[in-house]
Amino acid sequence: MNHMSARRTLLRALGAGLLVRHGITGGLAGQLQRALANGVDPVPAGLRKTVGTVTLNGRPARAGELVKPGDRIVTGPDGEATYVIDRHAFLQRGASSVEFGRGAADFMRVLSGRILSVFGPGERQIRFSTATIGIRGTACYIEEEPATTERRARTYFCLCYGEAKVTPSAAPEQWETLLTTHHDHPLYIHDDAAMPSTMVTAPVINHSDAELLLLENLVGRWPPFHGQPGFEYR
Image 1 (tube, helix red, strand yellow):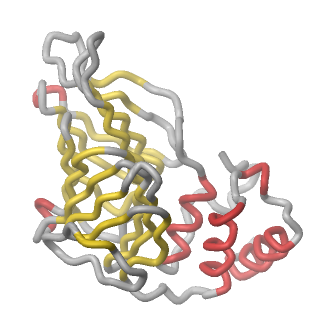
Image 2: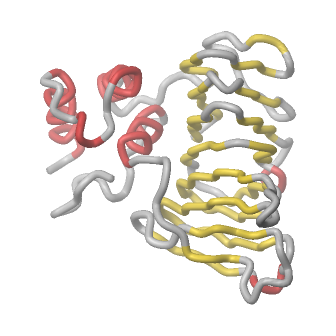
């Protein structure tokens, strides 16, 4: 199935309410429908949708505002933000704080919370509490988990597809290059150098292919797994 046929099929399915089992419901369905209807053209950069409490550099965020280098987006517990920067798109969940740097070597810092991201071509670095990730035209989901009385801080990281070099902060010598096609190797990255390995295999949690489809369509692309024979949405 080519992309135009796939777009028409998904739009019909959305209209008929047939994608509920893929997690495409409510506000997500509305966003996806608008993104698909946009065709192959990327949407304008900036904040596309906000829900609940969302601030940009400490003041209430407004739909359409640009997110620029040096900016920080914070969502309250009831908040969520979908936004586009250049050829990259982001779905930031509630109780999250993300800061964007001024170059590829410090492109994005996840200070707290959870974010799903898709990136255009080129190499960039993402930093969070337990690792530095060197990404290359990829998609990933990050979920920061603060320390508890039972364990030190850890981060959930899923390279949904693409290539990334993962360097854990607690044990940089354990760096690993990942190459995945469809959520092949999610990880818990631990801030604990005493562990035999600071990177431990994890399940796929808290993000969906439907959300990746939404983000990629916002920037005029399709996930690489879309339309593959036998593919089923997660």
